[in-house]
Image 1: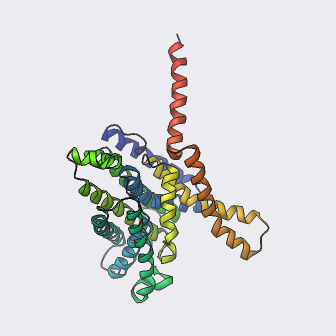
Image 2: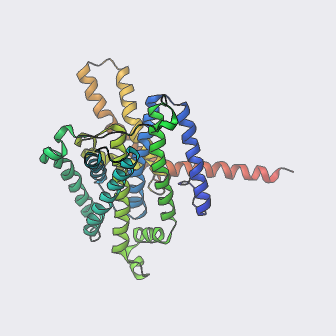
Image 3: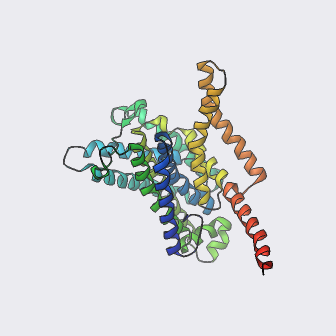
Length: 352
């Protein structure tokens, strides 16, 4: 995949196309619920990839990306309510609303980034944590517009008629979600390997040295936060389309914490870690439901376990990864592959 190899832009584009083929093949074999999960991974991947760029490559700690996802989701819902009047084709409504979510995320990210350019470490985390607390509460404060706790409905686009009347809807969700996410990953990968990406890493590694070498530290931070926020809002808008609702319950404060924990467990050093993080965000709640169903608990106790088990699992995984593999799952994967290659090369050299 393009996020795993950092060579030429052409090679990254070819690997992205290969990833698209693999997703296509998977969508043809998965059952409907697993297909919906695969589409949900794509939505979360937009956010985790953006957060990886922000925290892993630029060193800015954010606890507010769940709120940025919520801003994208509500933008999609409100834009749909304004555009669904019969004069615009559903496909164009989808494009316009997602572009609106991206634009809102960029604007919000630029505003927060300007404030965050002067902050570091816990101060920046506190600022973004405040955003994560305030944004979901706006839905209940302005319930006449944002729908309160129930949220706003989001219309999901139907599969094109060219695919046939019996085309599986979940397969269409997979195609739609990954058709949006894979180009985002390709753009982020190219960004990481550009001059701006090098500036990001320089600011992360040593701010004073980066400033002395001529890098505009404040500008780099603002641009990075803006890009990351745009990705999160796009992921939130896509998630709202998949779940067909934008509600505060879908983007709680814990989501921001889970996003950060997911990218740390996956590996902050590269965008490959964002893939593992998105997989964890989707797989752990489902695993918690499966484990709870196997235990002989009363319904109320089972619901309590189902709600708390993912949090406990995330915490245990985070402690384990930080203790045994500080570079995350992606770093562990790289070490395993490198070890296999190093063991294979001498054998090949001895082959007559």
